[in-house]
Length: 523
Ligand SMILES: [Zn+2]
Picture (cartoon, rainbow, N blue to C red):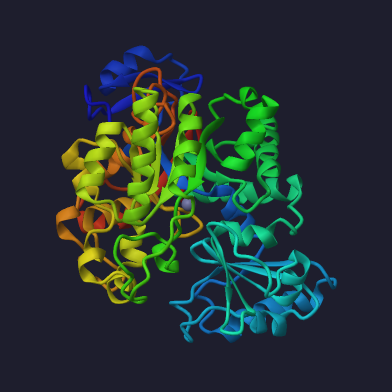
Protein backbone atom coordinates (compact mmCIF):
# COMPACT_ATOMS: atom_id res chain seq x y z
CA UNK A 1 0.00 0.00 0.00
CA UNK A 2 3.00 2.28 -0.39
CA UNK A 3 2.38 3.95 -3.77
CA UNK A 4 6.13 4.21 -4.37
CA UNK A 5 6.58 0.44 -3.99
CA UNK A 6 3.12 -1.10 -4.15
CA UNK A 7 4.29 -4.71 -4.31
CA UNK A 8 7.32 -6.12 -2.51
CA UNK A 9 8.36 -9.66 -1.66
CA UNK A 10 10.07 -9.29 1.70
CA UNK A 11 10.55 -7.14 4.75
CA UNK A 12 12.57 -7.11 7.92
CA UNK A 13 11.36 -6.21 11.39
CA UNK A 14 13.30 -4.83 14.28
CA UNK A 15 12.05 -3.40 17.58
CA UNK A 16 8.43 -3.63 16.48
CA UNK A 17 8.88 -1.67 13.25
CA UNK A 18 9.59 -2.46 9.63
CA UNK A 19 13.35 -2.01 9.34
CA UNK A 20 13.70 -2.81 5.65
CA UNK A 21 11.20 -3.42 2.85
CA UNK A 22 11.95 -4.61 -0.68
CA UNK A 23 13.01 -7.60 -2.72
CA UNK A 24 14.14 -10.74 -0.93
CA UNK A 25 17.76 -10.14 -1.94
CA UNK A 26 17.70 -6.57 -0.67
CA UNK A 27 16.16 -7.56 2.62
CA UNK A 28 18.59 -10.45 3.16
CA UNK A 29 21.46 -7.99 2.82
CA UNK A 30 20.10 -5.97 5.71
CA UNK A 31 19.09 -8.58 8.24
CA UNK A 32 21.48 -9.93 10.83
CA UNK A 33 22.67 -13.53 10.59
CA UNK A 34 20.77 -14.60 13.68
CA UNK A 35 17.47 -13.18 12.44
CA UNK A 36 14.43 -15.43 12.53
CA UNK A 37 13.36 -15.90 8.91
CA UNK A 38 9.77 -16.75 7.94
CA UNK A 39 8.84 -18.01 4.49
CA UNK A 40 5.15 -17.42 3.80
CA UNK A 41 5.12 -19.68 0.74
CA UNK A 42 3.41 -17.23 -1.54
CA UNK A 43 0.68 -16.08 0.82
CA UNK A 44 -0.32 -12.41 0.74
CA UNK A 45 0.63 -9.85 3.35
CA UNK A 46 -1.34 -6.63 3.72
CA UNK A 47 -0.95 -3.81 6.25
CA UNK A 48 -2.88 -4.62 9.44
CA UNK A 49 -6.54 -3.73 9.02
CA UNK A 50 -7.71 -0.56 10.76
CA UNK A 51 -11.38 -0.57 11.77
CA UNK A 52 -12.48 3.07 11.84
CA UNK A 53 -15.90 2.61 13.33
CA UNK A 54 -16.65 -0.18 15.75
CA UNK A 55 -17.28 -0.53 19.46
CA UNK A 56 -14.95 -3.08 21.05
CA UNK A 57 -15.98 -2.06 24.56
CA UNK A 58 -19.73 -2.10 23.82
CA UNK A 59 -19.29 -5.49 22.16
CA UNK A 60 -17.37 -6.69 25.21
CA UNK A 61 -20.26 -5.59 27.43
CA UNK A 62 -22.77 -7.50 25.29
CA UNK A 63 -20.87 -10.65 26.27
CA UNK A 64 -22.15 -10.00 29.80
CA UNK A 65 -25.76 -9.57 28.64
CA UNK A 66 -28.69 -11.75 27.56
CA UNK A 67 -28.41 -12.71 23.89
CA UNK A 68 -31.53 -11.26 22.23
CA UNK A 69 -30.36 -11.61 18.59
CA UNK A 70 -32.23 -13.42 15.81
CA UNK A 71 -30.91 -16.07 15.33
CA UNK A 72 -30.82 -17.78 17.79
CA UNK A 73 -34.17 -16.36 18.96
CA UNK A 74 -36.94 -17.01 16.45
CA UNK A 75 -39.84 -15.50 18.36
CA UNK A 76 -40.63 -13.21 21.31
CA UNK A 77 -41.19 -16.30 23.48
CA UNK A 78 -37.59 -17.36 22.96
CA UNK A 79 -36.30 -13.94 24.04
CA UNK A 80 -38.57 -13.94 27.09
CA UNK A 81 -37.40 -17.44 28.04
CA UNK A 82 -33.75 -16.34 28.01
CA UNK A 83 -34.51 -13.33 30.20
CA UNK A 84 -36.64 -15.45 32.53
CA UNK A 85 -33.88 -18.00 32.91
CA UNK A 86 -31.55 -15.31 34.21
CA UNK A 87 -34.25 -13.61 36.29
CA UNK A 88 -35.07 -16.91 38.03
CA UNK A 89 -31.59 -17.08 39.52
CA UNK A 90 -30.90 -13.34 39.95
CA UNK A 91 -31.43 -11.59 43.28
CA UNK A 92 -34.60 -9.48 43.30
CA UNK A 93 -33.84 -5.95 42.17
CA UNK A 94 -30.67 -6.93 40.30
CA UNK A 95 -30.57 -5.36 36.81
CA UNK A 96 -30.91 -7.63 33.79
CA UNK A 97 -29.51 -6.34 30.49
CA UNK A 98 -29.99 -7.75 27.02
CA UNK A 99 -28.61 -6.89 23.60
CA UNK A 100 -29.49 -7.39 19.94
CA UNK A 101 -33.30 -7.61 19.66
CA UNK A 102 -34.40 -7.14 16.02
CA UNK A 103 -38.11 -6.39 15.45
CA UNK A 104 -37.87 -7.01 11.70
CA UNK A 105 -36.29 -10.47 11.99
CA UNK A 106 -38.34 -11.84 14.91
CA UNK A 107 -41.33 -13.97 13.77
CA UNK A 108 -43.98 -11.59 15.21
CA UNK A 109 -42.32 -8.51 13.52
CA UNK A 110 -42.96 -6.39 16.61
CA UNK A 111 -41.14 -4.57 19.38
CA UNK A 112 -40.85 -5.99 22.89
CA UNK A 113 -43.37 -4.55 25.34
CA UNK A 114 -43.39 -3.63 28.98
CA UNK A 115 -45.73 -6.60 29.53
CA UNK A 116 -43.36 -9.06 27.79
CA UNK A 117 -40.50 -7.99 30.03
CA UNK A 118 -42.67 -7.86 33.19
CA UNK A 119 -43.75 -11.45 32.53
CA UNK A 120 -40.16 -12.58 31.96
CA UNK A 121 -38.73 -10.77 34.99
CA UNK A 122 -41.36 -9.58 37.50
CA UNK A 123 -38.84 -8.97 40.31
CA UNK A 124 -35.96 -7.44 38.35
CA UNK A 125 -35.52 -4.23 36.36
CA UNK A 126 -34.81 -5.09 32.71
CA UNK A 127 -33.17 -3.08 29.91
CA UNK A 128 -32.83 -4.64 26.44
CA UNK A 129 -31.06 -2.88 23.57
CA UNK A 130 -32.28 -3.11 20.00
CA UNK A 131 -29.76 -4.38 17.43
CA UNK A 132 -29.29 -0.79 16.22
CA UNK A 133 -28.39 0.51 19.69
CA UNK A 134 -30.80 3.36 18.97
CA UNK A 135 -33.88 1.79 20.54
CA UNK A 136 -34.28 0.01 23.85
CA UNK A 137 -36.97 -1.71 25.88
CA UNK A 138 -37.51 -1.56 29.64
CA UNK A 139 -39.98 -3.14 32.08
CA UNK A 140 -42.16 -1.63 34.81
CA UNK A 141 -39.56 -1.98 37.55
CA UNK A 142 -36.94 -0.23 35.41
CA UNK A 143 -39.39 2.60 34.71
CA UNK A 144 -40.26 2.81 38.41
CA UNK A 145 -36.59 3.17 39.35
CA UNK A 146 -36.10 5.76 36.58
CA UNK A 147 -39.26 7.63 37.66
CA UNK A 148 -40.84 7.27 34.22
CA UNK A 149 -44.62 7.44 34.24
CA UNK A 150 -47.35 8.79 31.92
CA UNK A 151 -46.57 12.33 33.10
CA UNK A 152 -42.85 12.21 32.26
CA UNK A 153 -42.14 14.88 29.63
CA UNK A 154 -40.41 13.79 26.41
CA UNK A 155 -36.66 14.38 26.50
CA UNK A 156 -35.19 16.55 23.74
CA UNK A 157 -33.86 14.37 20.93
CA UNK A 158 -35.49 11.21 22.25
CA UNK A 159 -38.90 9.65 22.86
CA UNK A 160 -40.56 7.58 25.55
CA UNK A 161 -43.12 5.82 23.38
CA UNK A 162 -46.63 6.07 24.85
CA UNK A 163 -49.85 4.33 23.78
CA UNK A 164 -53.18 6.02 22.94
CA UNK A 165 -53.91 6.37 26.65
CA UNK A 166 -50.56 7.99 27.30
CA UNK A 167 -49.08 4.92 29.06
CA UNK A 168 -45.40 4.17 28.30
CA UNK A 169 -45.13 1.02 26.16
CA UNK A 170 -41.60 0.12 27.27
CA UNK A 171 -39.94 1.38 24.06
CA UNK A 172 -37.32 4.13 24.38
CA UNK A 173 -36.08 5.89 21.27
CA UNK A 174 -32.57 7.32 21.01
CA UNK A 175 -29.99 8.02 23.68
CA UNK A 176 -31.71 10.95 25.44
CA UNK A 177 -34.66 8.66 26.27
CA UNK A 178 -32.52 5.60 27.02
CA UNK A 179 -30.32 7.66 29.31
CA UNK A 180 -33.26 8.20 31.70
CA UNK A 181 -33.04 4.48 32.54
CA UNK A 182 -29.38 3.73 31.80
CA UNK A 183 -28.13 6.23 34.38
CA UNK A 184 -29.66 4.04 37.13
CA UNK A 185 -27.90 0.85 36.02
CA UNK A 186 -24.76 0.23 38.04
CA UNK A 187 -21.63 0.27 35.84
CA UNK A 188 -19.57 -2.85 35.29
CA UNK A 189 -16.43 -3.16 37.39
CA UNK A 190 -13.09 -2.41 35.73
CA UNK A 191 -12.02 -6.00 36.42
CA UNK A 192 -15.02 -7.46 34.61
CA UNK A 193 -14.52 -5.08 31.67
CA UNK A 194 -10.85 -6.08 31.38
CA UNK A 195 -11.85 -9.75 31.14
CA UNK A 196 -14.38 -9.23 28.36
CA UNK A 197 -12.22 -6.66 26.55
CA UNK A 198 -9.55 -9.34 26.19
CA UNK A 199 -12.12 -11.64 24.59
CA UNK A 200 -13.11 -8.81 22.25
CA UNK A 201 -9.48 -8.13 21.33
CA UNK A 202 -9.02 -11.79 20.35
CA UNK A 203 -12.05 -11.49 18.08
CA UNK A 204 -10.50 -8.49 16.30
CA UNK A 205 -7.17 -10.31 15.89
CA UNK A 206 -8.93 -13.32 14.36
CA UNK A 207 -10.22 -10.98 11.70
CA UNK A 208 -6.86 -9.46 10.86
CA UNK A 209 -7.40 -6.19 12.71
CA UNK A 210 -4.45 -4.49 14.37
CA UNK A 211 -6.04 -1.09 15.17
CA UNK A 212 -9.55 0.10 15.86
CA UNK A 213 -11.43 3.18 16.89
CA UNK A 214 -13.54 2.56 20.00
CA UNK A 215 -16.19 4.76 18.56
CA UNK A 216 -18.49 5.96 21.33
CA UNK A 217 -16.95 5.41 24.75
CA UNK A 218 -19.52 6.43 27.34
CA UNK A 219 -22.57 5.89 25.10
CA UNK A 220 -24.11 3.37 27.50
CA UNK A 221 -22.27 4.86 30.49
CA UNK A 222 -19.35 2.75 31.76
CA UNK A 223 -17.13 5.32 29.99
CA UNK A 224 -14.57 6.08 32.69
CA UNK A 225 -14.49 2.38 33.69
CA UNK A 226 -13.77 1.47 30.05
CA UNK A 227 -10.91 3.95 29.79
CA UNK A 228 -9.52 2.71 33.10
CA UNK A 229 -9.77 -0.90 31.88
CA UNK A 230 -7.81 -0.03 28.72
CA UNK A 231 -5.15 1.80 30.73
CA UNK A 232 -4.71 -1.13 33.10
CA UNK A 233 -4.54 -3.64 30.25
CA UNK A 234 -1.89 -1.50 28.62
CA UNK A 235 0.10 -1.18 31.83
CA UNK A 236 -0.03 -4.97 32.22
CA UNK A 237 1.20 -5.46 28.65
CA UNK A 238 -2.10 -7.06 27.62
CA UNK A 239 -3.34 -4.43 25.18
CA UNK A 240 -2.16 -5.75 21.83
CA UNK A 241 -4.83 -4.08 19.71
CA UNK A 242 -4.25 -0.38 19.08
CA UNK A 243 -7.19 1.68 20.34
CA UNK A 244 -8.22 5.18 19.23
CA UNK A 245 -10.79 6.35 21.77
CA UNK A 246 -13.67 8.39 20.43
CA UNK A 247 -15.58 9.63 23.45
CA UNK A 248 -19.16 10.89 23.83
CA UNK A 249 -19.36 14.62 24.49
CA UNK A 250 -20.41 14.52 28.14
CA UNK A 251 -17.43 12.35 29.12
CA UNK A 252 -15.07 14.16 26.73
CA UNK A 253 -15.86 17.44 28.49
CA UNK A 254 -15.06 15.84 31.86
CA UNK A 255 -11.75 14.49 30.57
CA UNK A 256 -10.80 17.89 29.15
CA UNK A 257 -11.67 19.55 32.44
CA UNK A 258 -9.57 17.10 34.45
CA UNK A 259 -6.62 17.58 32.10
CA UNK A 260 -6.40 13.79 31.85
CA UNK A 261 -6.46 13.74 28.06
CA UNK A 262 -2.81 14.75 28.07
CA UNK A 263 -1.89 11.55 29.87
CA UNK A 264 -2.59 9.41 26.80
CA UNK A 265 -0.47 9.04 23.76
CA UNK A 266 1.18 5.66 23.39
CA UNK A 267 0.88 3.80 20.12
CA UNK A 268 -1.61 1.47 21.82
CA UNK A 269 -4.01 3.91 23.45
CA UNK A 270 -4.85 7.38 22.19
CA UNK A 271 -7.55 9.94 22.80
CA UNK A 272 -9.50 10.42 19.59
CA UNK A 273 -12.46 12.47 18.49
CA UNK A 274 -15.39 13.85 20.45
CA UNK A 275 -18.56 12.00 19.42
CA UNK A 276 -22.00 13.42 18.68
CA UNK A 277 -25.19 11.85 17.32
CA UNK A 278 -27.39 13.79 14.94
CA UNK A 279 -29.86 10.99 14.15
CA UNK A 280 -30.45 7.29 14.73
CA UNK A 281 -30.75 4.25 12.47
CA UNK A 282 -32.65 3.63 9.27
CA UNK A 283 -33.72 0.21 10.59
CA UNK A 284 -35.10 1.80 13.75
CA UNK A 285 -36.96 4.49 11.76
CA UNK A 286 -34.93 7.06 13.69
CA UNK A 287 -32.58 8.23 10.91
CA UNK A 288 -33.50 11.77 9.77
CA UNK A 289 -34.41 11.55 6.08
CA UNK A 290 -35.42 14.25 3.63
CA UNK A 291 -38.35 12.14 2.41
CA UNK A 292 -40.67 9.90 4.42
CA UNK A 293 -39.94 6.29 5.23
CA UNK A 294 -41.57 3.70 2.98
CA UNK A 295 -43.05 1.95 6.04
CA UNK A 296 -44.11 5.19 7.78
CA UNK A 297 -45.80 7.51 5.29
CA UNK A 298 -45.56 11.13 6.38
CA UNK A 299 -42.73 10.39 8.84
CA UNK A 300 -39.11 11.12 8.01
CA UNK A 301 -37.38 10.93 11.41
CA UNK A 302 -36.03 13.66 13.67
CA UNK A 303 -32.72 15.42 14.13
CA UNK A 304 -31.40 14.76 17.64
CA UNK A 305 -29.78 18.17 18.19
CA UNK A 306 -31.37 21.47 17.13
CA UNK A 307 -29.39 23.11 14.33
CA UNK A 308 -28.38 26.22 16.29
CA UNK A 309 -27.25 24.09 19.24
CA UNK A 310 -25.29 21.77 16.95
CA UNK A 311 -23.63 24.74 15.23
CA UNK A 312 -22.53 26.09 18.58
CA UNK A 313 -21.32 22.75 19.96
CA UNK A 314 -19.29 21.79 16.90
CA UNK A 315 -17.79 25.25 16.56
CA UNK A 316 -16.64 25.07 20.18
CA UNK A 317 -14.67 21.87 19.62
CA UNK A 318 -13.53 22.83 16.13
CA UNK A 319 -11.94 26.04 17.32
CA UNK A 320 -10.16 24.22 20.17
CA UNK A 321 -8.44 22.07 17.53
CA UNK A 322 -10.28 18.90 18.55
CA UNK A 323 -11.36 16.25 16.03
CA UNK A 324 -15.13 15.78 15.80
CA UNK A 325 -17.04 12.64 14.80
CA UNK A 326 -20.78 12.88 14.22
CA UNK A 327 -23.15 10.00 13.67
CA UNK A 328 -25.49 10.75 10.74
CA UNK A 329 -27.29 8.12 8.64
CA UNK A 330 -30.12 10.00 6.95
CA UNK A 331 -29.60 12.65 4.28
CA UNK A 332 -31.24 15.34 6.42
CA UNK A 333 -28.89 14.58 9.32
CA UNK A 334 -25.84 14.52 7.02
CA UNK A 335 -26.85 17.91 5.59
CA UNK A 336 -27.29 19.31 9.08
CA UNK A 337 -23.83 18.14 10.23
CA UNK A 338 -22.19 19.46 7.07
CA UNK A 339 -23.86 22.83 7.51
CA UNK A 340 -22.51 23.09 11.07
CA UNK A 341 -19.00 22.04 10.07
CA UNK A 342 -18.96 24.40 7.09
CA UNK A 343 -19.94 27.31 9.33
CA UNK A 344 -17.35 26.42 11.95
CA UNK A 345 -14.59 26.06 9.37
CA UNK A 346 -15.51 29.34 7.73
CA UNK A 347 -15.20 31.22 11.02
CA UNK A 348 -12.14 29.33 12.25
CA UNK A 349 -10.44 27.84 9.20
CA UNK A 350 -8.50 24.67 9.99
CA UNK A 351 -6.70 22.86 7.19
CA UNK A 352 -6.40 19.41 8.61
CA UNK A 353 -9.20 18.81 11.12
CA UNK A 354 -10.22 15.41 9.73
CA UNK A 355 -13.71 15.62 11.22
CA UNK A 356 -15.66 12.47 10.45
CA UNK A 357 -19.28 11.77 9.53
CA UNK A 358 -20.13 8.32 10.78
CA UNK A 359 -22.24 5.89 8.69
CA UNK A 360 -23.15 8.47 6.04
CA UNK A 361 -25.58 6.02 4.50
CA UNK A 362 -27.81 8.36 2.55
CA UNK A 363 -25.17 10.90 1.54
CA UNK A 364 -26.00 12.54 -1.81
CA UNK A 365 -23.48 13.47 -4.51
CA UNK A 366 -23.81 17.06 -3.34
CA UNK A 367 -22.97 16.02 0.24
CA UNK A 368 -19.89 14.17 -1.03
CA UNK A 369 -18.69 17.27 -2.91
CA UNK A 370 -19.22 19.40 0.21
CA UNK A 371 -17.27 16.89 2.34
CA UNK A 372 -14.37 17.19 -0.07
CA UNK A 373 -14.50 20.99 0.09
CA UNK A 374 -14.59 21.24 3.87
CA UNK A 375 -12.19 18.33 4.49
CA UNK A 376 -14.59 15.88 6.13
CA UNK A 377 -13.88 12.13 6.09
CA UNK A 378 -16.99 9.97 5.73
CA UNK A 379 -16.96 6.43 7.02
CA UNK A 380 -19.61 4.34 5.30
CA UNK A 381 -21.54 1.54 6.97
CA UNK A 382 -21.28 -0.73 3.92
CA UNK A 383 -22.24 -3.88 5.85
CA UNK A 384 -25.79 -2.52 5.71
CA UNK A 385 -25.88 -3.52 2.04
CA UNK A 386 -25.59 -7.19 2.97
CA UNK A 387 -27.39 -7.27 6.33
CA UNK A 388 -30.26 -4.81 5.74
CA UNK A 389 -30.21 -4.21 1.98
CA UNK A 390 -33.23 -6.39 1.28
CA UNK A 391 -35.20 -4.81 4.13
CA UNK A 392 -34.17 -1.32 2.99
CA UNK A 393 -35.76 -2.11 -0.38
CA UNK A 394 -38.92 -3.78 0.93
CA UNK A 395 -39.55 -2.05 4.27
CA UNK A 396 -37.68 1.17 5.03
CA UNK A 397 -36.55 3.04 1.91
CA UNK A 398 -37.87 1.49 -1.30
CA UNK A 399 -35.67 0.37 -4.22
CA UNK A 400 -34.50 3.76 -5.46
CA UNK A 401 -33.15 5.15 -2.20
CA UNK A 402 -31.92 1.72 -1.07
CA UNK A 403 -29.80 1.52 -4.23
CA UNK A 404 -28.08 4.76 -3.28
CA UNK A 405 -27.01 3.82 0.26
CA UNK A 406 -23.32 3.98 1.08
CA UNK A 407 -22.18 5.81 -2.09
CA UNK A 408 -18.55 4.71 -1.94
CA UNK A 409 -17.91 5.01 -5.68
CA UNK A 410 -19.13 8.62 -5.58
CA UNK A 411 -16.51 9.27 -2.88
CA UNK A 412 -13.82 7.68 -5.07
CA UNK A 413 -14.87 9.82 -8.05
CA UNK A 414 -14.69 12.94 -5.90
CA UNK A 415 -11.16 12.02 -4.75
CA UNK A 416 -12.36 11.98 -1.16
CA UNK A 417 -10.59 10.14 1.66
CA UNK A 418 -13.21 7.73 3.02
CA UNK A 419 -13.40 4.52 5.01
CA UNK A 420 -15.82 1.63 5.47
CA UNK A 421 -16.74 -0.14 8.70
CA UNK A 422 -18.63 -2.84 10.57
CA UNK A 423 -20.01 -0.94 13.59
CA UNK A 424 -19.55 -4.05 15.76
CA UNK A 425 -21.69 -5.08 17.72
CA UNK A 426 -24.29 -3.99 15.15
CA UNK A 427 -22.72 -6.30 12.53
CA UNK A 428 -19.75 -8.68 12.89
CA UNK A 429 -16.30 -7.15 12.60
CA UNK A 430 -14.64 -8.65 9.50
CA UNK A 431 -12.79 -6.28 7.15
CA UNK A 432 -12.72 -8.79 4.29
CA UNK A 433 -16.52 -9.06 4.45
CA UNK A 434 -16.87 -5.28 4.58
CA UNK A 435 -14.51 -4.93 1.60
CA UNK A 436 -16.59 -7.61 -0.13
CA UNK A 437 -19.75 -5.53 0.48
CA UNK A 438 -18.16 -2.39 -0.98
CA UNK A 439 -16.84 -4.24 -4.04
CA UNK A 440 -19.85 -6.47 -4.79
CA UNK A 441 -22.86 -4.73 -3.17
CA UNK A 442 -24.80 -7.98 -2.86
CA UNK A 443 -27.57 -8.34 -0.26
CA UNK A 444 -28.24 -11.40 1.89
CA UNK A 445 -30.90 -12.47 -0.64
CA UNK A 446 -28.39 -12.05 -3.47
CA UNK A 447 -29.74 -8.83 -4.88
CA UNK A 448 -27.28 -6.40 -6.50
CA UNK A 449 -27.90 -3.07 -4.78
CA UNK A 450 -26.75 0.09 -6.58
CA UNK A 451 -24.23 -1.40 -9.06
CA UNK A 452 -22.87 2.06 -9.99
CA UNK A 453 -21.60 2.49 -6.42
CA UNK A 454 -19.32 -0.58 -6.51
CA UNK A 455 -15.62 0.13 -6.01
CA UNK A 456 -12.45 -1.74 -6.92
CA UNK A 457 -10.78 -4.14 -4.45
CA UNK A 458 -7.81 -1.76 -4.24
CA UNK A 459 -10.03 1.13 -3.19
CA UNK A 460 -11.72 -1.10 -0.60
CA UNK A 461 -8.33 -2.15 0.76
CA UNK A 462 -7.20 1.49 0.94
CA UNK A 463 -10.32 2.20 2.98
CA UNK A 464 -9.11 -0.34 5.56
CA UNK A 465 -5.43 0.67 5.53
CA UNK A 466 -3.98 3.92 4.16
CA UNK A 467 -7.20 5.94 4.31
CA UNK A 468 -8.09 4.45 7.69
CA UNK A 469 -4.72 5.50 9.14
CA UNK A 470 -5.52 9.10 8.22
CA UNK A 471 -8.64 9.07 10.43
CA UNK A 472 -6.43 8.95 13.53
CA UNK A 473 -3.64 11.20 12.12
CA UNK A 474 -1.38 8.15 12.03
CA UNK A 475 -0.46 7.80 8.36
CA UNK A 476 3.19 8.31 9.32
CA UNK A 477 3.21 5.12 11.43
CA UNK A 478 0.42 2.95 10.00
CA UNK A 479 -1.55 1.93 6.93
CA UNK A 480 1.24 0.67 4.69
CA UNK A 481 4.26 -1.59 4.84
CA UNK A 482 7.09 0.93 4.78
CA UNK A 483 10.44 1.22 6.50
CA UNK A 484 10.02 2.91 9.87
CA UNK A 485 6.32 2.21 10.28
CA UNK A 486 4.88 -0.02 13.01
CA UNK A 487 5.19 -3.70 12.05
CA UNK A 488 1.41 -4.29 12.03
CA UNK A 489 0.37 -6.67 9.27
CA UNK A 490 -2.00 -9.43 8.31
CA UNK A 491 -1.24 -12.60 6.40
CA UNK A 492 -4.02 -13.69 4.03
CA UNK A 493 -4.66 -16.99 2.25
CA UNK A 494 -5.22 -15.13 -1.05
CA UNK A 495 -4.61 -11.76 -2.59
CA UNK A 496 -7.79 -9.62 -2.39
CA UNK A 497 -6.57 -7.58 -5.36
CA UNK A 498 -6.27 -10.52 -7.76
CA UNK A 499 -8.84 -13.08 -6.53
CA UNK A 500 -12.28 -13.03 -8.21
CA UNK A 501 -14.14 -10.14 -6.48
CA UNK A 502 -17.02 -12.42 -5.46
CA UNK A 503 -14.54 -14.52 -3.46
CA UNK A 504 -13.04 -11.75 -1.31
CA UNK A 505 -15.19 -12.74 1.67
CA UNK A 506 -13.80 -16.30 1.50
CA UNK A 507 -10.19 -15.21 1.99
CA UNK A 508 -8.86 -16.52 5.30
CA UNK A 509 -6.85 -14.54 7.79
CA UNK A 510 -3.82 -16.77 8.41
CA UNK A 511 -1.90 -14.60 10.83
CA UNK A 512 -2.17 -11.22 12.53
CA UNK A 513 0.94 -9.42 13.71
CA UNK A 514 1.00 -6.31 15.91
CA UNK A 515 4.28 -4.50 16.44
CA UNK A 516 6.17 -7.51 15.09
CA UNK A 517 4.50 -9.93 17.51
CA UNK A 518 2.18 -12.69 16.26
CA UNK A 519 -1.16 -12.19 18.05
CA UNK A 520 -3.19 -14.65 15.99
CA UNK A 521 -2.39 -17.69 13.95
CA UNK A 522 -4.99 -19.70 12.02
CA UNK A 523 -5.42 -23.37 12.77
ZN1 LIG B 1 -21.49 2.95 15.98
